[in-house]
Every structure is written in structure tokens, then in C-alpha cells.
Amino acid sequence: MAYDTPGEVDFVTGQPYQMWERARNECPVIHYERSGLDPRPSYHVTRFADAEHTLRDWETFSSSINAEVIGEYMGELILAMNGKEHRQYRNLVAKAFRASVLERWDTELVSPVVARLLDRIAPLGRADLVRDLTSKYPVQVICGVVGVPLEDHEQFHRWAEQINTGPLHPKEGHAASQAMRAYLEPIVAERRKNPTGDLISELVTAEVDGERLTDEKIYGFLRLLLPAGAETTFRVLGNCLYALLTHVDEMRRVVADRELVARVIEETLRWETSVTMVSRVAAVDTEVAGCPIAAGSPVNVVTGSANHDEQRWPDASEWRIDRPPQPHLAFGTGPHQCLGMHLARLELRVALNAVLDRLPNLRLDPDAPAPVIQGYAFRGPDALPVCFDPAPAAREPQTSGSSFA
Image 1: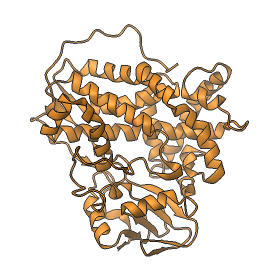
Image 2 (image 1 turned 135 degrees about the vertical axis):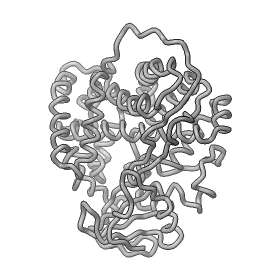
Image 3 (image 1 turned 120 degrees about the vertical axis):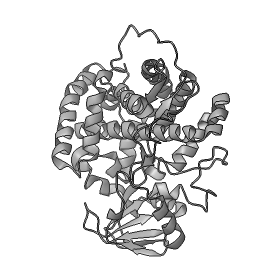
Image 4 (image 1 turned 90 degrees about the vertical axis):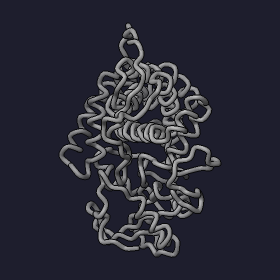
């Protein structure tokens, strides 16, 4: 299946699943002669088995392409590394995501953040859960994890968006990248002198085989983590809430049986993951599903399509929390599988339980436009207008959130 460009799909409001379904059934590798940002022919892999193989075979399908475009704005990226360099770097930063740290983040950061946001919503009886909750919660968590003041989360949210869209708006992307580094430099210097329990402290003090991260790798990781941790989780949380709000009977089941929350999360990650594709480049002449791919060609692994592969999930376009569990590709797979996936699952679990506890009789607002999940590479609802039974206003906490220490 060949196209001149992917321009027939709107990147902001697009609904690409029908196109991907056709590709899976007719020709599972979509060939584009060129794209807006890259003049080279590119290939989009749409079936689960092919996608999984491509992500695992890092020697044939290199992640180095991530340094070509977004690396200009993020700096030295773990996403662009391969082999020994990648393993050493990943081992350094993986310590910051170990289970004992996640437990601490839950009690000291994640649960308090969502509780404060719901304190403001619960007495009102009406809210937009994107505006009032999902767009604020993950970025505040990531700021706390990193070790920057929570009150600066809106600034970090803006920087994250501008860095992510740097290839489309280079001036704003470069300015945001430089501003974020300038903001972080004194914090990094202070943590070197006086480490606390935040992620910056972990990064500047961690050693593997006597090696520590260079400054460029530290800032590259932080520029990656803040957009990735905030933008992706906020969208998938919106997708989880959308799924529950549009499946009323299932919502009642989940309210009554919280053991089902884990199923809600995994099925939503499969059904409407927030990031639909992963970039690779062919390191050698190769093929996928019989389609020849020349060395140097960009290869997009369309995880959103792979997670809808009917050969693996019957009626894949439907959201069903009773599906037999089996791995999906929402967090990728292979050596570059998402480091933050356990944190993301923790944030989703805590938020969903808190929403169901604090906003009783939660339902879509009948007087507002129906919400829609949309987008090509990034998917989520722009708004989730809801009604619920209002609760008495909670007393404001006596201490303000600052950094996670």
C-alpha cells in the first residue's frame, strides 16, 4: 500500500484506525514516498507480529533515527542509543524507577497530588476532567519525581509541548529546550552537593562500572522525561475515563469491584494508547512481511495499529475489560521498552480509584458536546465534560507542594 505522503490524515483530529485496518488486511507495510519532515521513503509496520519483531531486532532496526530530528531539541537521548551504550545508560537511570522508589512516590507524591486536584473539583458537581484533572496531574507528578517545585508545573507543561513539537516550530522548540536547561542547571548543581531522594539526585550520583552520566545525558534525559511522562500519561488517563464514561454498565461494575481497575488500564492501553507509533531506521537492507526496505529508510512501528490486530484480539476495535490478558505494545517492547511504564500504571491506578471514590454518580454532562478521542500520532480527548454528585468542600492543606524530597 503506497501513498505520496501521510498528509491525508490530520495529525490533530485524525482517525487513522480505518486506514490501518485496511493495511493489516491488504498490505501490512504502508509505503510513503516522502513525508513533510523527511524526504526519504518511509515504511509503516501495522501488524502485531511484525511490529514486535521490528522493535526487538535493534541491530536491523536502529533507534538512532530519534537523534536526527527530536534530538536537536532534547539533546543526547537514550532513545537514540543502541547496544552497549544503551545498556549502560539504561542501567544508570533504571535505578530511579525501582519498586521501592515507586512505593514512596505513591504515598508521598502521586496520591497527594490527585487528592488536591479532586478537592477543588468535588464540591462543584460539574467539571471538565481534561482541563481540571488529567492535564494537571501527570505533569505535577513528573515535576515531583524530578525534583522541581510543583508550582512550576504549568511552565514545564508549556516547555514539554514546545519541545515535542520542535520539528514543526523550530524557533519555539529551541527556546524551550534552552529555557528548560537554564532552569534545571542550578538544581542539578545543588543536588550534586546535597542529594535528596528525587530523580535528579539519582541521576547525578548513580554509577555503573565506575561511570556516571555526563551533563548532556542528564539534561537529555530530563528533556525527554518531562514531555514523555506528562504528555503520554495525561492522554491515556483521559482515554481510560472516556472508556468508562461511554460504557455505563462497565463503569458500574468497576465502581463496585476495584479489582477491575487493572483490567480497565490494560485494555485502554491496548485499545487507545496515547502514542501510536515508534520510530526506527533500517540499518541494513531488509524486509518486513515480504516488503523490501532499503538501508537508511525510516521505519515507523505503528503500535496503535498492532494493538488492534484482529489476529491477536478478536473485535479489536471494541473496548472489553473481560478480554483474556496478553501483552500489548503500548509501552513498546525489546531493549527500548518504556522505563516509566510502572510509574504510568501507578498513576493511572491511583487516579482512577480516586475519581471513582471522590466523584460519585459520575457521568457525561448531557448539556455539553460529546467527547471524542482523536489524533494521529498522539491520541486523547480534548475535553471530558462531566456531572457528579457534589461533595462538601475539603479543608485546604496547611502545607504547599514543593519538590519531592
